[in-house]
Length: 340
Image: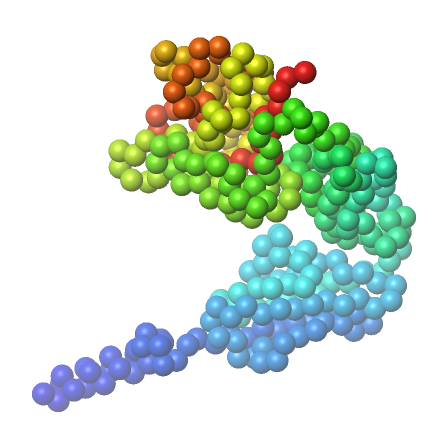
């Protein structure tokens, strides 16, 4: 009996010490150093005892004539080293240093665009004197009658040129371009969506889920995300919209849309039509054999609606053309126009 009691007490002590019962939680210390002649760091209280997993915020504030370079210390990712303010989940003792440097050079951020067609949000107060390492997010804002086209120039981040927001680290003189394009004539528009207010009729084809999200967007804040089902035996197609009530038989249309995936390897994707003209038809309008990951890619093609269209279906859809689709992808800025 005594041995069992001693064992119970021992187990209780170990559990309390390791936090297994939740009565106690590990704590860590966060030590931050910096050169006070170069700047200051705003610290939260209680950094000597930070509970495991707590997110702390540190903000480096350079003195006049200096700029923040990076954080140094173990446990930081490359991205975190450049973040200011830095927000980090504390899961170990941390010793960090805020590095400042004297401003001895400044750079120019130059963006060429037509101000009659649109503007840019996010430019530095003085784009001719940008402190090295400054991170800027530029947003293209088209005027009425225009739409975002593309960023260009040797200094434009290649994987962001097709989206209306671009993130740039100014570590040299930067020269980029921005183009806007004319909005389509409304008389030609059959279907036009960037999913800002709803899914606009887009639904799953097969077992995937289709939902509006903000995690990726070519323009605006929303796109639709297509996520394959993981259920055994599920057939994962893609996402579709039925345009039967919008199109006219015998008319030629231009179909376009933008697709994004985040895989490191290129993936095959098709933009396709499905309808019945007395027989079930599946027509590939645009097939991209190797669609790169991490960048928005445009699909575009023309097709004439058959004179003998029957039933109630004329579907436009995007999907990877394979039986074992496991690709998560996004769709944005879909446009269907009567051909000129």
